[in-house]
Image (cartoon, rainbow, N blue to C red; front, side, top):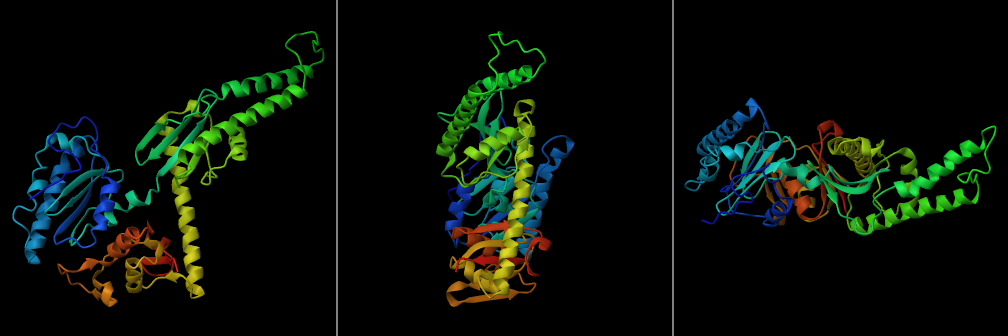
Length: 400
């Protein structure tokens, strides 16, 4: 039996465990019908203090519940199927370097273990393939963005990705506002001096308002144009938002120069030089949370309009499952806490809901819709029930 672990469990960990890799999860999605059983497990982690000592106990209890469930439902698990996870229980180093959550995908051929940058609900399930519901935030990229710091002391681009906030090298980008703004400040100061009762016109530092100010405005505009050109060249292939961190006057100047299609309307207000990276990252995340809420509202309105006119909106879960399988779903909003087992055979146009039944050949309806939507390059947004259009736990916007 060949086992491949994303996380190296045989070497000491010097920092937090690696995040569960989205690219590897996408590869798992391509294998649309793996053989049963595949176990998907997610659980919240305590990162520090006495509470962190309970992390291995939490996994142990989950494994005990899994074994009891498999026995009750007559699932014939392969011999020693859970052994790789039981081996984690006594791995002290592993439990000392946790993130907010832990994600695991296990079948007979492979083991994938990684950290989650958020606290998931306690979750485990058997299926013929990986369950995607506990990992939806990784696919949604709701907290991913670029952050451009425009400070007098320095100009820099950062990549915000989940818990990480890392500087990005941008060839050709000016690195400081100070030179561009220095003469601007001199002019402003001189204008104030020129309005004093007795200006000293023979002072070699006094030039007064006029052509010099216009020249400096051109220099400042050129500066922001150069920053924008370098940033666009670096990130134009991305669809991620670009959030500015700067003073209001710099935000206005950059907006005029900007040619990037995904510049956020809101910005991190204030002098970036006076803020620590962690503060900048958290203020940017708050902007992203608000952007996500606005996007969810817009999608909800669009779905409701399409349903009202008999267009591309869909809320029937059985039909939505078929639409997702055949690549017709552009965006799907789903309640990740909704549970409904179903027998699904898209080739026969068959979706049967199972009320209270648990079968090895059954799958979770919400998970199936989300998985098939993502597998066919659609987008899935996890939402609370009151944020989903209509009265169903699903709502989709179809491509056609």
